[in-house]
Image (cartoon, rainbow, N blue to C red; front, side):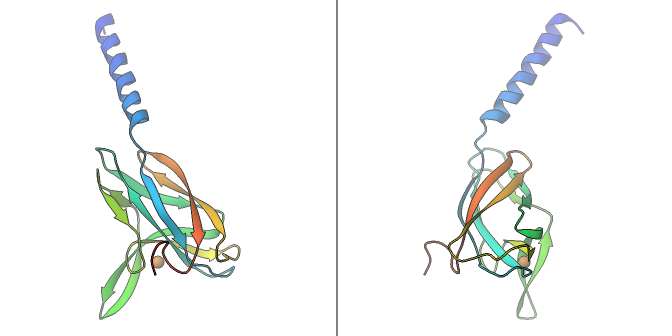
Length: 147
Ligand SMILES: [Cu+2]
C-alpha cells in the first residue's frame, strides 16, 4: 500500500467514525408501564422517534426489575388478541414507532419486585447503531396524556 492510499484509508475511517458519532440518537418518549406485583408479568410502552437518515434496530431491553425482558407484538387470531415475541423492532429512518396496548410492547417477565404506581424505573434500550440508551419509565395505569 502506498502512503497516499494508506492516508486515504485512514481519512475514510476517521470520516465514518465521525459520522456515526454525530448521528442523532433515537428519541424515546411517553415511557410508561403498568404497575404489578413481584413474581408477576407486566408491559411497558414507549414511543421511539428516529431522526437519523438511516434505520436503527432495537434488539433488547435491559433491567434488573424482571427475570426476563422480551419485545412483543400483539396480533388477532380467531377474534382474540394474542401476543408473540419478536427478536427486534426496526425504527425506519425519519419515522416514529409507537408501542401501545394492543400493539408492540415490552414484556417484563417475572418481576423481581413490586412495580408501584407513580414510581419511576430506568430501563436500558439496546440499539444496533445508537448503542445503549437509558430511559426512565413511570408506573401508571394509562399512557401519559391519555384519558
Ligand atoms: Cu406481551
